[in-house]
Every structure is written in C-alpha cells, then in structure tokens.
Image (tube, rainbow, N blue to C red):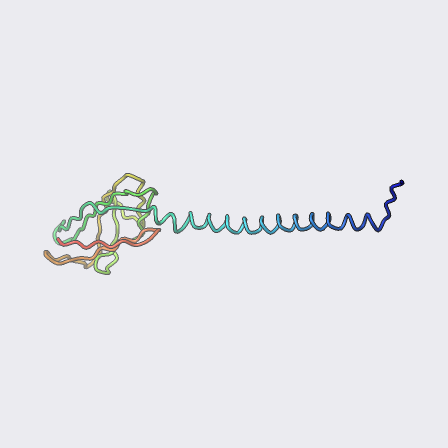
Length: 152
C-alpha cells in the first residue's frame, strides 16, 4: 500500500494550523495592547490619587499673637504623619490667603518630609485676629485640602 499525499490534502491539513497560529498571534497582540493601557493607568493612579491618599499631616499647635507693635502673626506647627512627603502650597484663615514664612524667609510652598515637622509663620497685610473668634484654617497641599477650626 503506497501512501500518496496530494496538494489538496496538504492544503486542507495546513489550513487549521495557519488559522491557529494567526488566532494565537492576534490574541497575544490584543493582550499586549490591553496590558499597556492598564499599566499606564495604574502608573497614573500611583502618581496622583494614591499619592494623595498617602498624605497625612497633623496640625499640632496654632499660636495667635501680636509682634512689633500691631503686626498680627499666626504660627502653625504641622507634622507629616503620612507615608509620603507633602508640599503645602497655601494656607488661608477664614478665606484670607496668608503669606507663609519659614525661619524668617517668605516662601511660596513648604515641603515636609515624612515624620518631620515644621513651624510656619502666617502674615497678611491688614489682617487682624480677634481673641475668642473662631477661625477656619484651610491648608492646601499638592494632594488635596484639609480644614482645621481653631480659636485663639
């Protein structure tokens, strides 16, 4: 008995193999494109939202006082108790944005490392505090906003 293979039989046998290889290649390509998108999304989340979740700070103390005659000064002590460094961009009292001073130097933002604390002096032209009044302090960081209520 002789084995005779014709071109028609070979074409029929090769067709399922080629189809399987093409489907496998298409599946790998589609998976790699989906993985790239998911990976980019996860990286963006780590840099943005997850970073802000890791931000935690405590306002340890707030001092209201008058210095140099009639100059109003508010000193706030902030400690970073979170898992990431924080950067404070703005502090306001009852809606008035205050100038921030650290160690006698006016700054636009204050960076606080993990487990570190900083003393920030707050000043604003023509702003005066009143003993017994309640003040809402809004601290704006790169990752979000926190509000503290204080009374001198």
